[in-house]
Amino acid sequence: FDPIAVYGYKSHSELVKAFNEDYERQRKNYTDTVAMTGTYISLVSGLLEIFGWDILLMAMGIDAEAFGEVADRYACWMQQYYNALADCDAPVIMFHDDIAWTSGPFLHPEWYRKYVFPNYKKYFAPLHEAGKKIIYTSDGDYTQFIDDIADCGVNGFVMEIGRAHV
Image 1 (cartoon, rainbow, N blue to C red):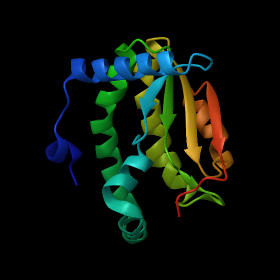
Image 2: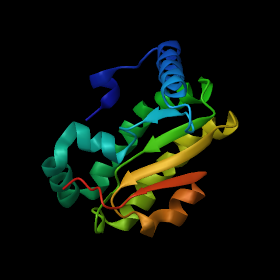
Image 3: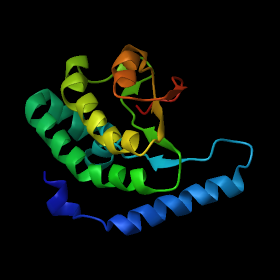
């Protein structure tokens, strides 16, 4: 699976414009909160959106390394969104990625450490360079990975342990 061939690239200026519009909408509609913008289909959530649970879990069971290469290709395609977020007006970026169920990770922890967290660091590099704060959200219990995620440069966490996609 090659996301670049399937989805192509988006216009950087159009992505920045869309993030700015979302940020302004948040500022206008929720005046008593921290306004932000961000993504939902970051990495694992994006793969779940594309493949669904059955295919994702089957692919992982058949060849976790090959599916890790798919994750890396998807992350390369998603980088364009983080480059645009770095250039948008929002000082705070919400990063949402469902990496766990209510009971914890649904993939082997080392797979996350090899394919997910290194890609987070790449995603976050332009955000850090631009001085953005990053808030991390995932459904399920991802507490096993708090240190890994913090090491990627996240500034805050939203815990939604009771909300898991099963």
